[in-house]
Image 1: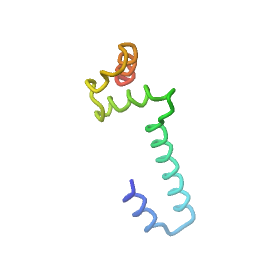
Image 2: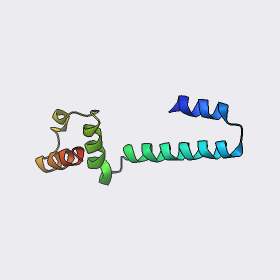
Image 3: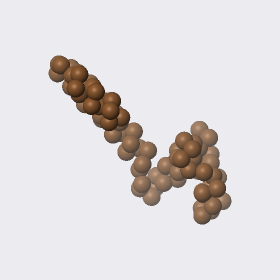
Image 4: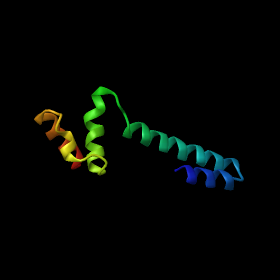
Length: 78
């Protein structure tokens, strides 16, 4: 993402290109904010997404209750 930003910024020659870069950065910020939303109410959703992406393994969910593990695994399969 950083390299994409740098190359787009270096190549920008018009105001329209600058606004396109701003939109790109806004979109990336929203993706990151949603992906790593650590509010307590959102953690199960975050864990489900991380399992789906392979960044968290099912075995690492052992500290959760069976209900929460089930919910996380359902989210990960979406």
